[in-house]
Amino acid sequence: MSLDSLNDFITALDAAGELRRITAPVRVHLEITEIADRVSKQPGGGPALLFEHPVLRDGSRSAYPVAINLFGSMRRMALALGVTDLDAIGWRITELLDLKVPEGFLGKLSLLPRLLEVAKFPPRIKSGTPPCQEVVWRGDEIDLDRIPVLTCWPEDGGPYITLTMVISKDPVRGIRNIGMYRVQQLDKRSVAMHWQRHKTGAEHMRQMAERGEKMPVCIAIGADPASMYSASAPLPPNIDEFLFAGFLRRDPVKLAKAVTCDLEVPADADFVIEGYIDPAESLVTEGPFGDHTGFYSEADLYPKVHVTAVTMRRNPVYATTIVGRPPMEDFYLGHATERIFLPLLKLTTPEIVDYHMPAEGGFHNLVFVSIDKKYPGHADKVMHALWGQGLMSLAKVLVVVDKDVDVRNVTEAWWITLNNIDPERDVRFTMGPVDVLDHASRAFTYGSKMGIDATRKWPEEGFTRAWPRVIGMDETTRARIDALWPSLGLG
Ligand SMILES: Cc1cc2nc3c(=O)[nH]c(=O)nc-3n(C[C@H](O)[C@H](O)[C@H](O)COP(=O)(O)O)c2cc1C
Image: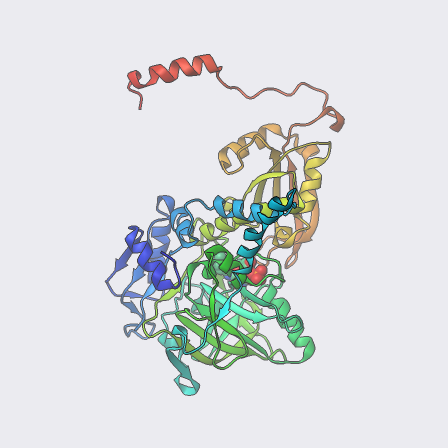
């Protein structure tokens, strides 16, 4: 079944036994968070939740249900992207990138279907009234208080819209960007836009400020799950996330013209908040916010979005997420990115065999990477290559191990690392940009990084002692015990 909308996704989750409906009235102020937090700490991430009767901050019943933890397990994340194994998407990308032209006429012809497949993905503009504009609020009708926006944690600066697709355009090249950036509701008709300085939306705003123009921006909530995920994917700024979502879905994303801004939005979105930022206006205080590091991030200054329209489906569901002490739903979104982007990392750093960002590291704090070591200093080369690429440049601790280490098994990765290092020899420190959310760095978004070379050391690297072998049983004994095992009653 193709998942063209949030409603399709929820129906598919229900059919797969992955959804629990909560009929009890539950407040959007803190209570939904407390339930979702407990559920996401269950083994494997717990079920997705649909709150059918959320209670708004003024005590009234919300007209719209709240869906949360939709992507919060390996199975649901794969289901959202139409695969059974997230690595399958990486393999598809590897095939596409393998553009070595085959020998002979027939060989060359065999490339055609692959190239045509790519041509099918660009988003299409739908004519007529799209589902996302079945209901339109303009002017005085606009009232964000009627949407069940969660106040997530007790010390948060206000209610936050979290599972967003923030749409903006590069004013020079016209390339669209969709980013998952939280927005803080300020009042009935304005929000603060939390795009961090390293993100594409923030770059678009810098460009608009230089031109002295107002910036149109749309915040879509709920759509086909591939588009929802793609907003969180760290694609290079010249790739439209809706094109990427079309590739993931194997079907183009349908877009519609926004009603009050010159932007296109997902035609099947549940809600779209349309508006503009005036770069000439003072920034506003955004935060504090209970963040995905598990700590509150401090309040800071961000641009205000003036809402010019809210459009929605006739029966929309408000999709949201919470972040906090890991693991939470965002771990699974990040995990999809980790798997999907492996071939892209390999394109520039082919010696990478695999990598993994454990939940405790919240993406930027810890990256394990295994390499096919070919020469002395190879681990250092890979560390610097990664610190030079996109958002990987924000990685605080990078640990490099040999190719035979399973980096997705964090216990194994630490076991090998801690055994293999001579700390003074193998730990490197360098400086660079760090994540906006890093509260320990000496300066905001600037600090040190640590690289650990946990590969086997070579004589050419000055290591002249013998390197020990990992303990393992011989094959003959293993086979004998395999045969005996069922009769031993040991499980
Ligand atoms: C649940 C969730 C919330 C996020 N919130 C923010 C945010 O508030 N600000 C931000 O800059 N990035 C946030 N991110 C990370 C961005 O979505 C991510 O870096 C994405 O690649 C940005 O898109 P861009 O490369 O088009 O800028 C969040 C990610 C997730 C999964």
